[in-house]
Image 1: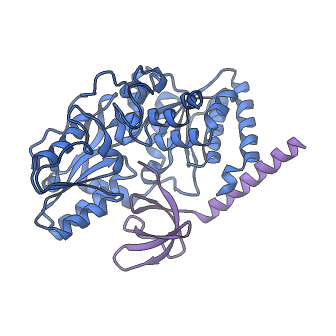
Image 2: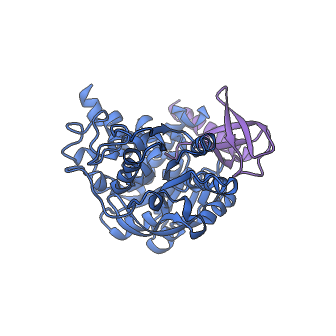
Image 3: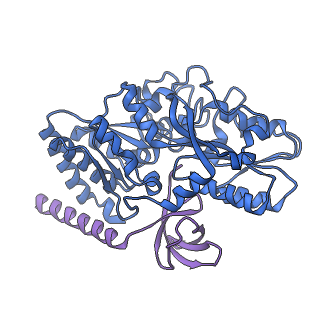
Length: 370
Length: 78
């Protein structure tokens, strides 16, 4: 879709956006909820162009690696270091998050145990099939985009009677976090750019309370520069007309109803509970845990570990405030100094969706270094 | 972590697995979440699973819109 990166088309959209900002009469602040959008905005160079057009973009809590509290990262490390002959499988980013006990990468596995980095939860399930005598734990982290895939492996393991397979859940729901951001009231958000791939699963209905109860407009966006500008234009139009709603600007990839098959599978295996997020604290109904019928697959109780509770961030790390949009990465004293991608002090500098890493790689600090 | 790629389904086997073509390479894809998908459909793949079937009509519409935007921009510049 090179047309969605065509400089002429993007210039035209930026011009229209600038015109709409003038019409509104003040500089709107929009939150891009998803870390992949933050990355797309910075990598394509749109952030400064939008600023020039009068639109301030702030990053939201859409980085699962980042919002997973350290208590869960520490539980994963405990499984790997305290249990013999276990395989812990995880997405790559999850293995580098620093805690007071190091990270999964720096921790020394117990005798016979190993860490496996996987791209798909199915690879973890395959490990469990290959070695049925060996406990295989998948560190299952993600939003609604990823949760159906994790739920799939649990149902398959139940069907196949794979008792050696379990999941350490770090499963997060986006809409309750948006409510927390709005109710927290720390950041005045004029509009939201909603995550395209979370919406592929949940559809657009779960965001409607944002317009209805808070009067805040929003649009679901894809991940090409053109997609994001279309969504921003839509949000500004809604602002100008005073008619907030949830616009879908990614209809080539997702339907308004999302994916009901994926949602049914999530609901079969997991149920919502009041979960702790890094930086945002305890949010009602914002996490998923195992339903009673599948509780045997929960690695937490199986390995006798605590997996919920408030933050235990490393001293000085302000990732939590970055996730709430209260400060920019440059506002943290550690950013770019003690805390860098090869020596991160918090997950926002680890994940490729983390605002600190993205600002470090593509932001003004980099331009100053160059 | 919600990074996902668009790819075209090239093969579907009976058990919900298949392969898809992504910028020239064949990737394995689990199709269990998109039972309606057919060979030749474009899907959005995340963590090894297709989570959505793309809408060809809407994709053409988006392309048309961007061609118009580009043309309008060129007219402006001229």
